[in-house]
Length: 136
Image (cartoon, rainbow, N blue to C red; front, side, top):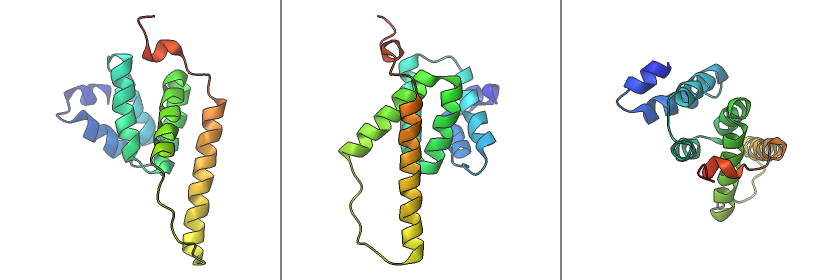
C-alpha cells in the first residue's frame, strides 16, 4: 500500500477513501501506515492529515487518531488539539430540541464521540515542541 500511495495520481483521495470506512478500522490503519511510510517533513504530515481529518465524520476521526496514537503519539496529540481548537472557533449551530428518538440518539452519539475524543486527547503525551519546530 505504501508503494501504491507513492504512485497514486491523487494520494489524498486514496487515503481519504480508505479513512471513510470507519466500520473497517483495518482500512484506516492501512491508509495511515501507507501515508506514514512515505518520507515527508513533519509539518507536511501534520497539515496533510489535518485537512483529511477535517473531512471525516467524528467516528472516523477517532479511529484515525487512535491508530496515529499507536504510531506517532505527538502527531496524534497535535492533530487532536488542533481539531478541538478549530471546533471551538467554529461551533456547529444549535439545533432545536427534538423529542424524536432518532434525533436524540444522534445527539447522544455525537456527545459520546466528543467525550471519547477529549478523553483520548487527555491521555496523549503533552504536545512536543519538536514536532512542529524540528529546527529547535
